[in-house]
Image 1 (cartoon, rainbow, N blue to C red):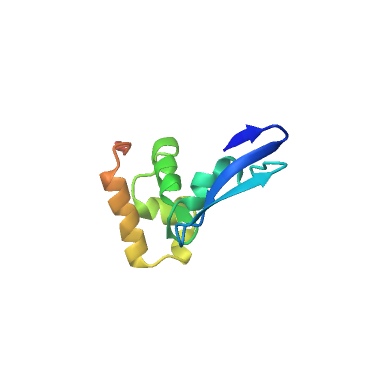
Image 2 (cartoon, helix red, strand yellow; image 1 turned 90 degrees about the vertical axis):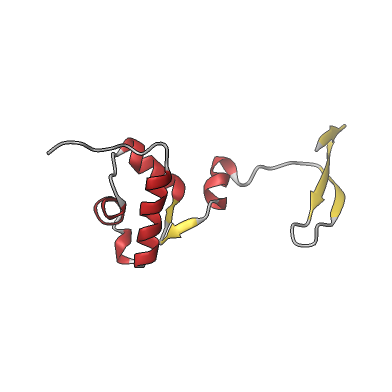
Length: 103
């Protein structure tokens, strides 16, 4: 992408075919905004993304999948047991896991 006078010169690629094409535009608009990575991120189950799981672990001291799907989001109403198990796997593999100790 480059600016040429009053126009933008771009090379766009069709992700399905791989074909590239050069186009000119009078204006360039960022219509996705800062949440693009959240939109592209895969969902674990229901509306829950891996990024949200990590956030709950570090900021809300979520300890396990049950804590996330029932106490914090109520996603357990819409999730399967395998989706809940995948949350536990993500939490176990994460470096950012916060161990909650206490009575």
